[in-house]
Length: 235
Image (cartoon, rainbow, N blue to C red; front, side, top):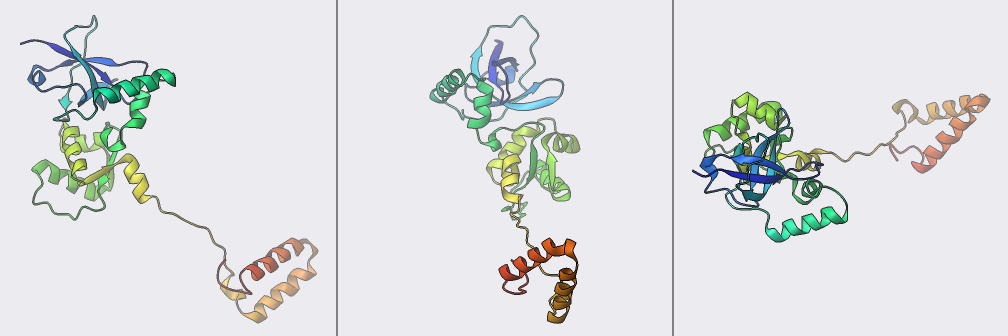
């Protein structure tokens, strides 16, 4: 069988594409624009985009593509051309453009954080055995990295599995988690319960008037009482 190589775009601040060898099992299925799982560095895994398929063997030893995530390409040639123009125009790497252009749920990496989708009702009947394991694990730990899920379940090719669960809204990742779970908070001040009694409040004012160093505190308290409509609980 013929040997193929792919140049892939990684969602990282890198100057160019990187070349990986295609396992022969993927010779007939790999396409430009698909996401593939590759190892970059010593341990980290990323979903990269195939930019070019060729048979030009590099002079250095190449790592293998670990998995193909998509059946069909998710990025077309016109999009790639636009990204490459943007990279030239803004003097950055195409990986920088990819990291911004693709939704976070499409940029799976070993350090990505996953959690159960808040709209998932807990129905396990249509899930595979491994998907049930993922749901069970996340129900016990709330959030985990992709690498932690892979290690805990003993599944090396975890990204394709998680990708399918993301598409079916069983789990969510990274930015989606932040957007959904960051509560909006506001800070308020209120009068201590003991000074809601008018007699105790009057004694407090009298004491503060007698102490010169507490005039600023007295002004602040008077302003608070005015803003809170004379002793309302909060402003």
